[in-house]
Length: 371
Image (tube, rainbow, N blue to C red):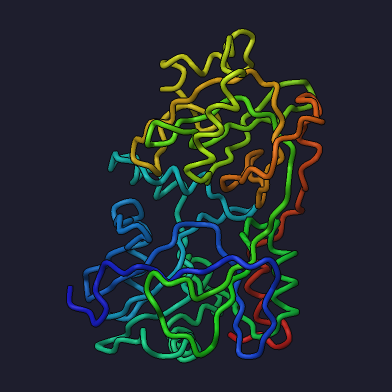
């Protein structure tokens, strides 16, 4: 493979902001919920690179085949791999594609085929475009991926919608969440492609929920708490694992060990998740248990320490998918004024689903939208 921009490439990153920037010269895109992927093509050679330098090529053979029919012979394109369903983007199903067995990968490629959404062009032919302004890169990308034709949807290769109108972007932020979108990305029209630099902006959904702290995992250093295991009660009084709260400082990780110590005593007695402490049960974990093996972390040990479910934590989260927090939450504070049984699913925002098929059409039709 000989390209003007060679793998590996560190994707350009974004910093979080609480409100949508509205300065002139900005471009807005929906924030897709999938695997960040940079596609490298040189003739018959196609490589799917990830943000952590782990190639994704072997996991998505159906995309490699499709990209070979759509892309020019020499190019480098930044985008996102997603799984699209009639109910929106499905990140849980996407994670299942990262399987070590080739037979399983090939089976899932047929049963749950992935799509690729392009949003930046880093190289075309022998030309390195990373130093060019984003507006020029986007215009060139549009000439390569004009997906407005009647057969565009069947290819599962898409060009992300984009607008220069902040009112349209604000509408996307609210309306597209039901389809599984994370929020809105913001880029300056004159921005070059700066690898591994947080020079874009992202506006993401954030809410709070009071959750039961039912266990924790040790940090990889073995000296502090890495994450808190969170639960919510359903209408029948069952406590379900809904996700974790993490991203603690080194000092806070050690403080939590001391704070949680009293709750470790006799924690498995009558614990609603006590069966998951059994190693055999963890091996059968389906992803909703707090223990088990993570596909994305390549077999990383996710064993956990139970706590008596008596502590309530207020947690910031982005959105819920299939009854769980899509991303890890962040601990806001412990709520000694709340009882665990008051922590139910009823407090979570329910977002009406949006039709993915309409998103591209509406984006193109919106006033002020840039193709």
